[in-house]
Length: 263
Image (tube, rainbow, N blue to C red):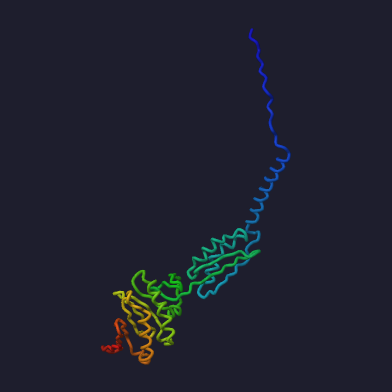
């Protein structure tokens, strides 16, 4: 007869957390739920809705209406949810904006500081050069601004070189007090890559191809001294001044085939 074998197991004892652990856990869960609810409320557009936008900066050419239209979609958010980086990128994409910074001002205002491009030259017909030598392209260029800017003209990718020469020459001409009629109107490289400038009275001055042995500052200084002492009163009769001479320059007079060589 088979015997019944009864195996006794040790009782299973489950370790239950104590009351303190339970209370702490429930408190943490409660705080997380409250935090998420509060965050959701803070990001709701109707809570601390952005009521105004203030723009700082000396703005001469930026279209205020275009700026408002560009920023308007971001104003539908609230103070905490406003996309600061998005606003900055959008503002800086506008044609006349060189840089922008955006900050929140409690309780419901956005403040935008804008630095506008300072146009100092034209490159081609539709592109401008700012005071840092950077290109930018407005949708439209006012006619009065076009007339006031020096034109840079030359082969592709030479605008930086021409801008550098203009920066060196312009203060020298301005310091002579020659007047508005003898202001630099164009800096150019011709088909042989010889550097030249044209003044507002249509007089052209040819410097030639710059090389390591040619000091543009000294060449221009010698010419300006001679021009102011002996030639300024005849400026309206001069068509071309050729400075490609070692010890002097040649003058081509208007309505004449003759040249005068000065040493």
